[in-house]
Image (tube, rainbow, N blue to C red; front, side, top):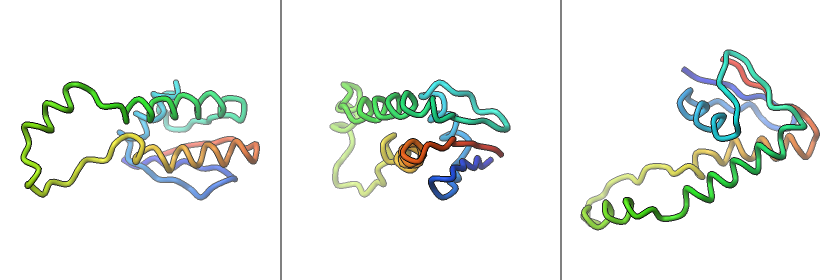
Length: 107
């Protein structure tokens, strides 16, 4: 299922339901059929998402064990980390904050 985020400050953003649930969960929202992040909520939402992205970039002890066990010669596609997946949404939130407009979503 696809979720569409809309804001007068940015182009529509379409993402998969699982990613939308993750990103909204980080900022303290629940994915419903429709929803809104108000102008007043944007600063906190941006801060929470930036903090989660920064935390995801920190190396975790379990990650280094997996990396050493995997051959570096193998050509595997590295999975997208949270920062790469969250960037378009974060960009929309920032643009909406600059222009003082809500971010809405729907199915």
